[in-house]
Length: 262
Image 1 (cartoon, rainbow, N blue to C red):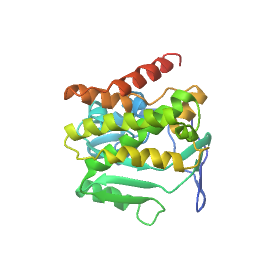
Image 2: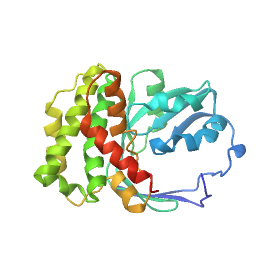
Image 3: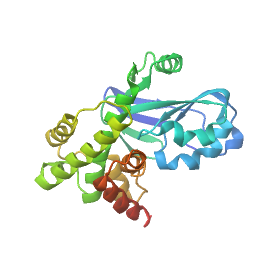
Image 4: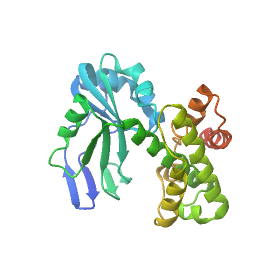
């Protein structure tokens, strides 16, 4: 981490958790560990390279708790001989101060079925974190991406909370972004139905209109946006299959230009 902290405090739906974990500010202070949990934003992965090389040895597993569908490819250059385990995260949270986080909903993680996935689930036994080991992990990973390409993009573009999806033009854009993602998912072998687009938009519209997204928070805070791992992934993988993704391409271009100001 960049700065040492005295305590880690998490305000959860079931109470306040306070821990005093050991912290390090220099990769030279650590040694290889059996498990490494990478929970940075996807575009911050290169910044964690020195830490991954120091923490991950030949017997290590790097659990990648990030958005997108390219977990393995993103982390492999820094993983050495460690195994990379992708994780789908559903844990709405807000960092309110250094060392303090507010958890706004249940913590749910999904991992691929297999020995590593089962071992990962055991790490959280007895905690409030729900870990689901799923046979069809790619379905879960792409469904999460479908959610992200819509809600994150329209909130970051407009600078507004998810109530903006109740406006007809914004709802149309969100739906079309998801449909492009669905077409690419199917080309990648993931059998998603077009109906997921209406399902996601309806969920956004019926949710708390004042709810934000991590991309909106980052834009308002002047931080870099995670658009490349989300909408950008749809564009990249669409090109692999000659599938046009004009709206995701436009969203990616605009929000990457916003990043250029950071």
